[in-house]
Amino acid sequence: MRFIALPVAVLGFSVLGWADPVPEWHPPTVTDFRGPCPMMNTLANHGYLPHDGRNITKEAVVSAMGSALNFDPALANIMFEQAVIANPEPNATFFSLDDLNRHNVLEHDASLSRMDAYFGSNHVFDQATFNETRAYWGPIIDADMIANSKVARQLASKAFNPTYRFTEHIEDFSLGEMAAPFIAFGDIKKVTVDRELVVYLFENERLPTELGWTRKTQVIKVEDILAINGKIGAATSLFTVDNAPNTTAHDMNRRRDLHAGIPC
Ligand code: HEM
Ligand SMILES: *[C@@H]1O[C@H](CO)[C@@H](O)[C@H](O)[C@H]1NC(C)=O
Ligand SMILES: *[C@@H]1O[C@H](CO)[C@@H](O)[C@H](O)[C@H]1NC(C)=O
Ligand SMILES: *[C@@H]1O[C@H](CO)[C@@H](O)[C@H](O)[C@H]1NC(C)=O
Ligand SMILES: *[C@@H]1O[C@H](CO)[C@@H](O)[C@H](O)[C@H]1NC(C)=O
Image 1 (cartoon, protein in one colour):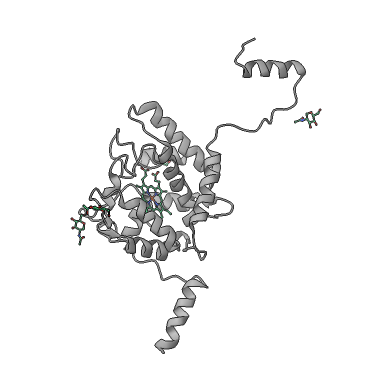
Image 2: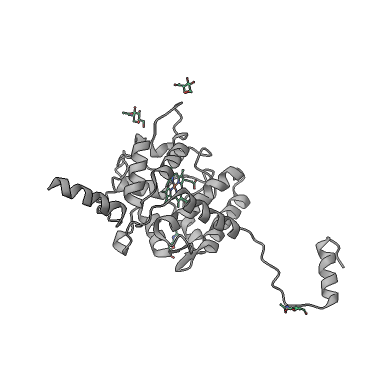
């Protein structure tokens, strides 16, 4: 019996994409560690990661990302290597969710759902901040909408936080975060995702199974994330193509002068 059952289970997982049921959700207790990442908190709440948010090893990350979201082990490995530097101990082999709170290590300004460290907690979900973000999202979020919410949060921080910091390195990290909702819950090719699922994740730190979401059957690879990052990055530009209707020669000359900075 076992001899036959085992290969079937393995096949089911990898080929047909069956996944075990999502483990029960329990909110964090007062002694549990949580951080600024809505997904890491969610995975801890479901017990995919240690519920206390401590001692998260590479094996734990690979297993959690694989069972919960069907991430390729190679991708999960890269994510762990990027994360473990947040543990201040040299050569650490694990991190805790509160290590992720260290400002300007991985955690940065202009988050979609957390205040800047300058204003208060940089890791506890903040409804007012998230409301700002959500205002840019339609019922189906696309690359432009997520990019607009990202740029809006950056503009608010740049304008009102005198310690605002957002380097090119942070931009790379930030684009990965913006890609995450599409990767976990959306259409990776079209770069669209139901707003309802994303809002549910942020506001409840829980997987949206009760809204009908199931783990993707397709394995998520590094290339999938990079492709989406590129599209969102392009969508953060505030330029358009020149779609103005045809104008007279006089207008064209005037535009050229303005372009050269010469007022008429
Ligand atoms: C080892 C794995 C991961 C680590 C260490 C990690 C870490 C972080 C950190 C430090 C932040 C805070 C950045 C900020 O200051 O805004 C963050 C934000 C975020 N993460 Fe993760 N993350 C991981 C995996 C994931 C996954 C798998 C997803 C979803 C598929 C995800 C979704 C997000 C989103 C959407 C944000 C933006 C939150 C906001 O702007 O308010 N993360 N993550
Ligand atoms: C678990 O992590 C804590 C810090 O969060 C550390 O003090 C402790 O030594 C770790 N335990 C193990 C078994 O590595
Ligand atoms: C960390 O690793 C480096 C390179 O392997 C080694 O030179 C160093 O001594 C290690 N530090 C500690 C505190 O173990
Ligand atoms: C956020 O938006 C919701 C729905 O529009 C509203 O009910 C709530 O009062 C807002 N919360 C904050 C803190 O702005
Ligand atoms: C502008 O004029 C050119 C040539 O007269 C024409 O081919 C083009 O379709 C026009 N474009 C628009 C947007 O009206």
